[in-house]
Image 1 (tube, rainbow, N blue to C red):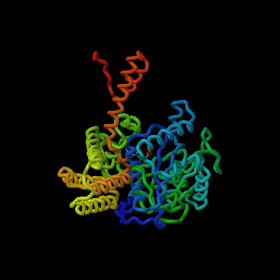
Image 2 (cartoon, rainbow, N blue to C red):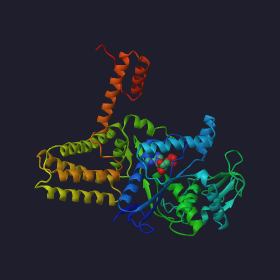
Image 3 (cartoon, rainbow, N blue to C red):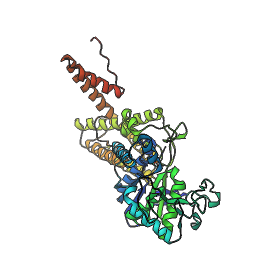
Image 4 (cartoon, rainbow, N blue to C red):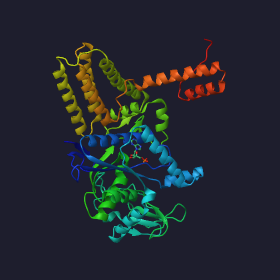
Length: 461
Ligand code: AMP
């Protein structure tokens, strides 16, 4: 039985999808105006593992993400760089998808671009207008917050306390908290609509997209903590008003921030490390291990020191796999008197692992159950008290855990060892090139390795 912490009810609830074993998940995707950073990666790795675990438990999961490819941030960046905004958005979207691939975030079934759902957006705004939840002004179409008394239920705020909205005198908004569904604009990019040319507001793309693929009600909506207010509040107001059905989403799930020195990593604060830069010096699995070593709702403080701890933690697991593989190649018996005991230990570990994951996807506890297991089993390995059959079962078990958490866990060599060997191969080829006096190519190898912080010094001998 899986329990999920629901931001809406502020408690853990038993997970039960709306339709049998089908799970529909929507997670807010990136606004594609810059390279994605490791704070984004934290959120998307967390939801990747949630999707993986639900699949492992037999659910049929459809995981949808939007891509915000039209937004003021994109337009402003395009003005700065002199690029076409949609072209700029496509460029950063490609990089984002590539980053996600590098991080083995591979469970999203569909990335839906806002600009490819303009008809759905217009339709939903039309419904809100028709039902009296929205109104038109000179500057756009706005959602009338006063028509939705539940506004604030997700973030536990009262409308009257919400003074964070600024009154924009140009818009003639009825209430300060009313938000734009459609912004009238004559400058490109714009789309035609019944209210004249313009662009969609930020909140409406998500509900138009989810209504199109999931209908007005679905199972899980996710994102980082910063999206609870006002973004997710606005989504609830739009969808529940348009459809008249409640709740729009059964389980609201939010990830904690990845912080640097106690502050949220963000583009605007400039304290970010891009995924691409991180991966130059840190294998993706080390970063994933770092992310999963903290519960998804808790904040993580990023530091090289903690990253190093993750590196050695992961190394211990790979070392264990290596030992198992070596032993399996050796001359040990097929069975042993300890087989039954080991079988029980495996069963208990699998149970502990699942209990941790069932408890709101508690990956740090799940990982620690694996370490407890390795510690115990290593004792018998050292005492030569283990059989080939048991080793084979352990191998299968570790692979199973790897699939859930997104690690390969099949290599007989750690990534570090492979990297060392690759450097040896390259330096040996470079030596041969120098003997042939091909300095151009040998210098290129040195310079490219240098970019990866691998320094080659040519000495006399
Ligand atoms: P954005 O494009 O800024 O809207 O971010 C896309 C997703 O990444 C959202 O779900 C954000 O909440 C999440 N996100 C952004 N920065 C961080 C961070 N430092 N830690 C965790 N998640 C983040």
